[in-house]
Image 1 (cartoon, each protein chain N blue to C red):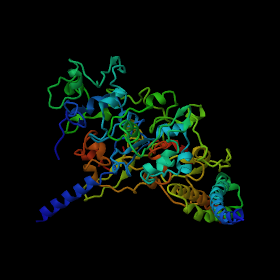
Image 2 (tube, chains in turn red, cyan, purple):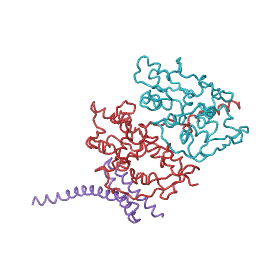
Image 3 (cartoon, helix red, strand yellow):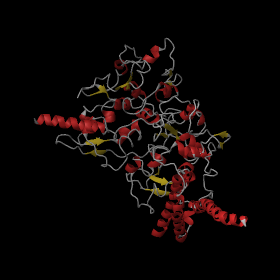
Image 4 (tube, each protein chain N blue to C red):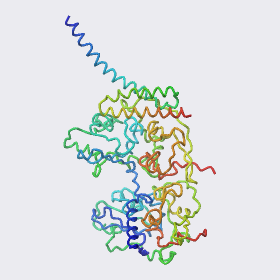
Length: 269
Length: 243
Length: 95
């Protein structure tokens, strides 16, 4: 009786362990052209369309994070914006640019959604609503980023260096969408954050590097609430759950796997 | 627990899309690759997952130069030998033999390297008679490559923590574990384990026991299927003598 | 006489509609004025920040009256702007 109970107990624990096996394992890492991919499926299936596949890499090479996430107000969490075809057609969200009229770098940007679909319109829908479909993209990642300076992990691109060397010039202002603002901003000096794990180099956080593409409102106060440095306590646990730094640095900006991108300063012994 | 058979130990069956493509499942034997390359090169630089079928390799991505295709592209060399290209979208007649080199489950395929002859002179350990890879490297039998041009990137190394002991949860007779970062980092660097397998947080934050390890988590990611197996208790549960 | 009566009837209607059009332009101008300076927030005094937060709060009801999705988008935009000023204000007051 005891033996049977023990056996059942072990079996239950093993099954529970297997189903909860999200920690302590090494899952697939997205390939460079897949990194930053977001699947949007609020209403696509209702509309008998495939869910939307949005790859960040193309848009981030052309626009700042701030433009989409502050001026156009896209949420920073998959599925939270709740974009509807009607919103797009009224010139909001994707429709801010994808309206068939806006010209960007000499090309007319295709219109995103239509009320009445004609036979050949489906191809246009499929450009975004492409999950599970074999859709030939207009831009190929490998060709597009061929000459960009490379880095480890994520997209495999050093986006910061790409801008510094002139390979990309992300646009930060859209007429009729963005508020006209001063170009230069006074920012806090870089500062060090001490890691909790002994032996890990200190983190050097640069406001300057972050504000170039994010401005202020993207992070404050939604992502970083505390006003006094050290007031908000968080560790790698929360970051790896997609909070704080992890809002960007787990799925779109350079990933957390690349420790030394943040942990740069040797610990003062 | 079943005792591992030396030539099968570290074998991974990959069967995501082979069936759809009308091919046999892939059998990947770790022993040949681990004799030539570090774990870090494949599992960090190239980005293979550490769970069978988790990487979801497609012929298309191989042909674009990712995963297997990082080396198996018909141009990269090992020593003076060209490494055979992995996949074709439309294999020509006679190319079947090339596909079968990997897509070999259930087929009688003559592999290029035979385990017995390859590992003949390599040091073996314990009753299980598995290769002692650490010793093999120390004695110069193998020199695993850690850098692949065009794939790997140089990084200044992080400071290694000193060896430390992990108290055994007990049952009285199991001695403490001596964990050596130095030994592990040699072939894994930091990123194989951190933060995916061992979240980089204060020691003691993440709780796990032999139950999770036998389940293939934490230490078990490697030590249940590829690195020396968990049957070999005393490789970790050593006496408190520092080596 | 007819002309006079028409003018009396039309004038209030006209001013009513002009009033609406006028306030629509106003909210947009006001919004631009308040929120174009978020990046200078750190240089503002406590009084200036308080004033901007109050102006955002005053603007909110006018934006609530807009049609969807302009309402949803502009409210979010206003909230981010207002919360940033409030954040910097809190930082300065706690110093």
